[in-house]
Image (tube, rainbow, N blue to C red; front, side):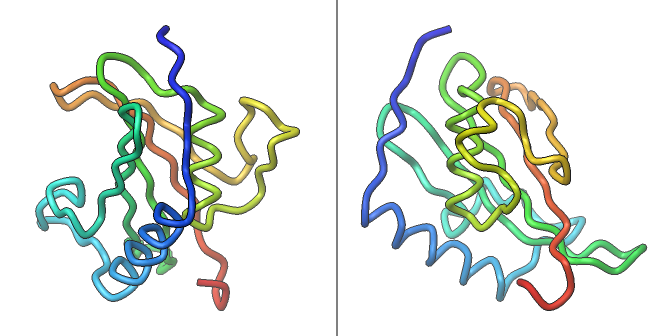
Length: 130
């Protein structure tokens, strides 16, 4: 696996706030184009990391869910980098001391839609904390 640094600063933090605000106003719903096709949901980092963030409302039970996918060209991203990016997007329950173990209330998956593998992270948002 090629090692890639994850470098972020104030401009990335600002972009995260913009993406989260947009996503709050535009929840993803089944039948819509994938969030990754909308640049308002996308943050590209140096060294190839790409993050796509959205919110969706689960129907049963009706809960708000935050979703994040992270990819790098050619292989899977480093799990700790994924979790650090998730933390930037408001995911809770993980800290660097946990290393490559996700928060127990996150769901983690690996998908490949033909453009290469990516990691998907989701977390139900407790009512009143979005």
